[in-house]
Image (cartoon, rainbow, N blue to C red):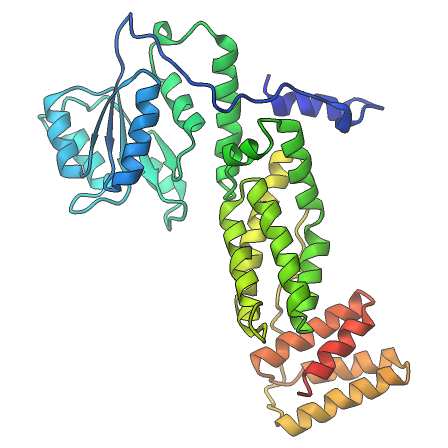
Length: 386
């Protein structure tokens, strides 16, 4: 029974608080050492990235397997015609002969001694093709960079003869459980192993922090958006820094890098660059939140409160003078405490064919009204008069 299964049992018990549950820390540095007294397991690695290849080769070697590494598909073909390998890892991108063509050649070349080998494709973090594409090509599985040692170990222990496995069943179970969770979270750009290192292997603490990160999303993303549209550089930068540190702590490294970009963008006098890159940040943020929520068994639903809407228009373009007059009219209604009339005027203004920047700000004023943040609405409206 996995850790998540045990947590689920605890959740379903009445009058039991999850916060009172404790599980043993995960020893993420514990090595897998396969016995070699009863045979050997041969692994072939082909990857053009020399640094990545050396790192993966080291991971495989530490398990006790015999590993050979090459830097191209051509070299790989030379190896499979000389020796028989049980497991082959092929990088998707290699010069002259990529991983897919190399796979085809291994399976069809008459001189190949590895037609029965299990073959996994190594992918970069972001690829255009869906997983099913590689399955249809004939790969036995997918492994994504940066490669987690536990995931690699789990692939190996699932293929080696049982007589080669160590007697330590707890170690094998831990590897399988963590690898399963790590593989799931990789789908939403979260590196579980990296995150667990920050919690010294305490899975319970990691899950609590990840759950809080999900719960805070709606409020914190909306607050950042408010700061962006009201030109509050310092506040926006501080919020981006806070989210960056939490994202990095739970292993959402790519998302942390996105927040870091926005920290740098907000150091300028204007937040226009941050605004133009807002949607790409939100897309990654929501991907992480959705994936984590699913993994945690939460029912968190990501709303579209942070999307920049494109409203239907009447096709009529307003001159800058006319646009500002309507903004002043809306502000006048708000000064007279006539919010209802101000909202109606805003809706009429939104029907015009507005420039993208003005439309985004009009949309944000509407959101501010919906959230009862009149001060934010006023700040945005005044900013459009500059």
